[in-house]
Image: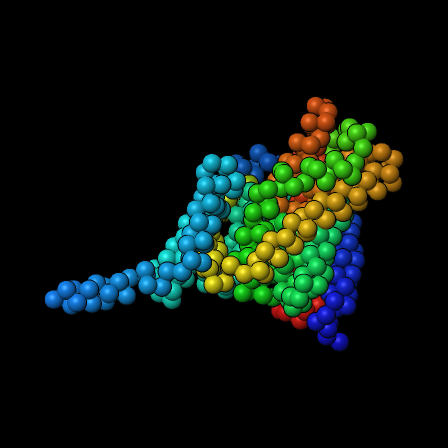
Length: 53
Length: 376
């Protein structure tokens, strides 16, 4: 259903966008909270990386 | 003989721009000159305002062909219109940005969404003022305080409003140190502003390398409308974080960024002709932009206050305003307000997390807006 081009449409689109933004950013936050688990895969050393090129 | 002389002079005059010069052109030339003055005398975003101001002056000289098809400024604008310039800016931004603070404090990223209430207040306000819904959406994005994203969304939704929206977005970003502190102080207590936050954890190289790859996959998968921008942001960041292609990272962050800044500023300035810019709509957009920045700052601070209560007093609410994006200006404002209150309150690293999340917040809001309005 297309959103109507009136104030109700603006309110609706704003409400959906604001709530969804929270959900998606929250999802990114959860993803980032899992990032420390990546360190179980091993360690990447800065000096080794710099020397290798 | 005399009549013939006058006639020839008139022919010559008609071939110059003088015959077409209007009062509006003169006003806009003064606006361009004022921008250059602000850049030079007040140091307000000189990298942007000098180019915009100069191109604005040239665009209002009727004889100039620079902004017409065949002119260089016209082709600079095509770079914006074809959405080539905004993703290249994001490439440079990615190469300059350390996303470590955002990875280190994942719970603070929610402020990147909270500080975008201003987008929707401006959107609804614009609709009430009679703008169409796509125009209102483009105006609302000013509240995201992200120049390239504002340009990107505007070009998709309401390209005819590009000069007003880009000028409002970049002007308010430059004025954030003046706009945000009063709102931040109004909504917080002295005790809250004195909160010293725990030091964030150290983020490893592996996490920093994984971040752009994972985010690029997620964004392309779930948000195709804004994927060009975030993908380029992440590519620039990968250049930076992998430490192997230092030359590419430096080129993206310096040479490309500088060239693109020149192209972008003359493109924006060249659209500021009197006919298009000197309207009531311009004043309304500028006013709505200010409203968006104030509400965005306020909602970010209020969300941070809630987080402070939930966390048992561990979050300084001043970091909330940084969620409005505009990296790193908003984070610097949080830091400066904090340090003025108490010299031991160092908020810069804490504020960078929400600030970087704000870039994603604006992109996500813009992407959802484009999707809801059926724009691809």
